[in-house]
Image 1 (tube, rainbow, N blue to C red):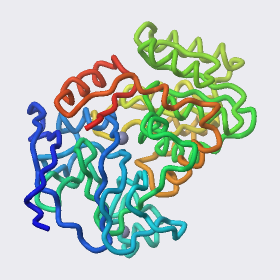
Image 2: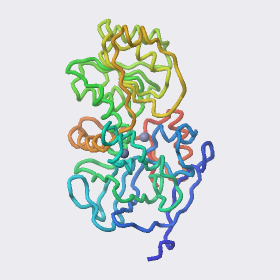
Image 3: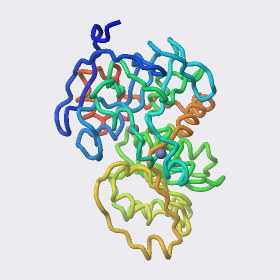
Image 4: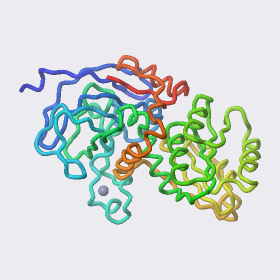
Length: 370
Ligand SMILES: [Zn+2]
Ligand SMILES: [Zn+2]
């Protein structure tokens, strides 16, 4: 087979701030242990908006974004197996961990057990660029080339592609944040942010046995989604002052504030506010600051030390979070409809509009269907 005979279309970010272009790439030569997917759908995540503005270091533009995707196996070369030892075969509908190349040999992997900090870590759709070959490393493309040792997960029986993409990278990220939050039965949990991470954190807090879950966010479209996911209380961040929010949250939590606050807003200003909102001797998990939006001031005495506050940072997710996200969709997908988060679908020519809609929060979840 001559690899130059077939071409695949992909939406490309040429450089930060440049308009999206649809380009064509030759079909890659499939290495031993690699898989070629025919893309079914790929999500647009808040990170993609930040990538378009150039707010993440180490991104090799031109870039084909799309780090959470689902596709049908079109070609596979050699034996490729999932984590349970079952072969990945042509026709299987699969997703994959966007992180690739974690070495399991460095100090971070072996001693710190923090694989998200492995220096060899690459991410499909973020730090694997569109060029050079093999390319096709992001989901906003008709085909996705999965290099050898990509962690592939079969779509579980009863889980639809829409449920997986509706949950997107927000669900595994929220699984990680909830793991760090260690929610006790009956405890009160406040989520700052009503994007996909915040919405999944809301659902998972309730599944973890929280007695009360509140969500501060915007706009109303997303707060309505939070209530449909079970939130007891919501408040529009754009219609209230920080003092009003503090008063309202105290009132809703018996005067003390929530036991646990999870920041999933992406706005640095949310962090000093979260330190105020959480109860004394509470826990604060910060997951929303994936990209750098600058500095803010906190008071170490009143916000942390005197307050006995436990602060935990949470960056990205690993294979266990993606694996368990699938298990959650199997068990609870009939109770919580993650596919309902998909507001609109876009073709490759409409990717610019999709990014604008996500940035303006006109949609909860935008999905690219190449
Ligand atoms: Zn993402
Ligand atoms: Zn490593």
